[in-house]
Length: 335
Ligand code: ATP
Ligand code: LTN
Image (cartoon, rainbow, N blue to C red; front, side, top):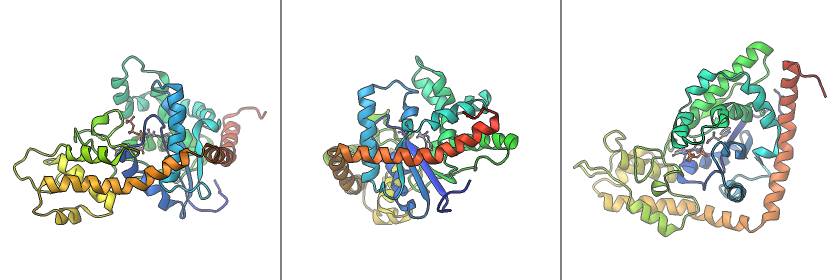
């Protein structure tokens, strides 16, 4: 389980199945750049995962490149961490098959994401959607990751990864390191602006703010954000009674690095008419440099190509080592 630098390993991925949104950014992504110095970091584009739901091939290709550009624009320096595309490293699919055989039907049936996505795609409940956590476990275990920074909704998948890894280790010895989810205190579950009882998600575009959206569209979405119908009309964090306002407080806090109390104090005595545009402005300001840098990088395809090629090579070197150990342990004849 050794790595060259002896730093702890951090790994995460996002599916290029849509445009990046504010939930993806404020939840996991904005915290990643700060981790690069302290950890050995691997950040990938989880394209294999996206085809559990039908994708348009040309759109998927474009989104994969867009996401890579956004990773770099958000501060992931490819010289200091490994950025790669999941399908470029065959060990992910190879280990996933092995782990499929150590993952139980019953545990997969309990996954909330499977239940949600199969309800939303009733005409395409495919085997990949069901066994998805085994592929995600392979993504993590190949790199012997210590920490997996994700949003709250992915915690269950990191837990099943630990269960599968422990089951495997109990049979074959200490092959895999058991990863911990790493979930931010503020921003781990950003809710939809139009329906604050649901998480912000690209599948509900009305209440979702996309990273590359124009400032005027972002401001409009915040001005229209659903607030609560209680009579109090003050900026107070109370997620049960005031889900809309509390979500806006969470967004403002995550965007400015303040606590919920700071935000309450700043807007004490001011109404929603002042608060909502202020949240919009704060979001526009943090997204502006990211949008501009993403656009600049997308104009340089040769550079992006050089990044993902080098990333795949570095990732494969580590991943293949783990895969070889696993193949040996389960009894496959060496090629
Ligand atoms: P979907 O629309 O299919 O549910 P998604 O918008 O959740 O997708 P993913 O690619 O599944 O996007 O998520 C990428 C990362 O962003 C994951 O770590 C996930 O936990 C995190 N994330 C997604 N939505 C939110 C949210 N609303 N708040 C905080 N983190 C989020
Ligand atoms: N399941 C995650 C994406 C993902 C991931 C991973 C995250 C795939 N493999 C490994 C962390 C580690 C999602 O849908 N957001």
